[in-house]
Length: 351
Image 1 (cartoon, rainbow, N blue to C red):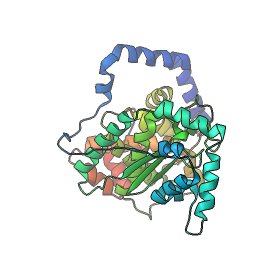
Image 2 (image 1 turned 90 degrees about the vertical axis):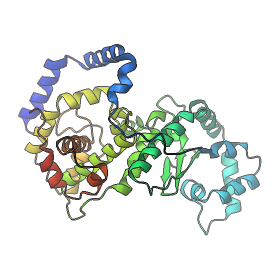
Image 3 (image 1 turned 135 degrees about the horizontal axis):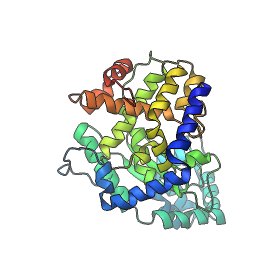
Image 4 (image 1 turned 180 degrees about the vertical axis):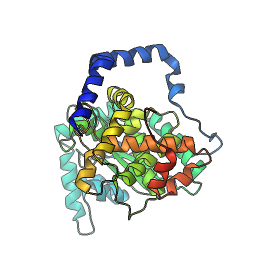
């Protein structure tokens, strides 16, 4: 990005809204005056899925583990939960299962592990809201994709061994990762700018982002940043369709302040991407400047958050759907021509 765009971004920030404190105050004012209408304002049009029967009962595996009184009981849990044992505990066909169960049971006696169990119970003692969110999301998926097979869902605590396992048949959450910033212990392998998404309210939207992958088609020969931007845009749109009233911030992982900033300066961000020739870049290292997990996209501005290319891809996809109302979600997902989606979107923010 040239000095002119960086300067413009900074000057506009100062002139338009004085300071970050002003943004937060402005957001709070909006929240205060929108009141109970806030939920309706963030909803999109969605089909009636009330007739589709879905019942989700999450298996609280961590409670069974905590109640185990012997290595033998732990061994029984491992044998009956192969995905958990393999993905979270590291059990494989050559593992001495008895020794593993002994070690795991010994680990459970650690005071720190006990603290994790207690805090998980405090935060996730009642997960009926999460179950309802999954039920509603899966109803919407079944509306669009009737052959979708609803996976079983488990929760557990592993001492930060793994945050999530997902397959077509099974989803397992390591809830100790999702305790929020005030937890006694935080996972050391997750940077702070990513850790802010490891909270209870993000659990279902972020899971659906992963589920979206099985429905999205792309052209493997197209290695441009635009292709990846459109891919992420499709994934974000998929989550919004399956959770029509979820806040966009829970999909993108941006804060309120960041969301206000990037929407206000969308045209500046886009102009910078064009000027820096990011959109059609094929070099992986360069593409990651706008697509990868980073605290900030410094090439655009000091306050521009990371992953900005993914968010921009979503704006393109949304504009494409607005300009092409006959295109269904299913057709969008299987359209592998990123260039055609971009051209037909007529995406020109600020105009």
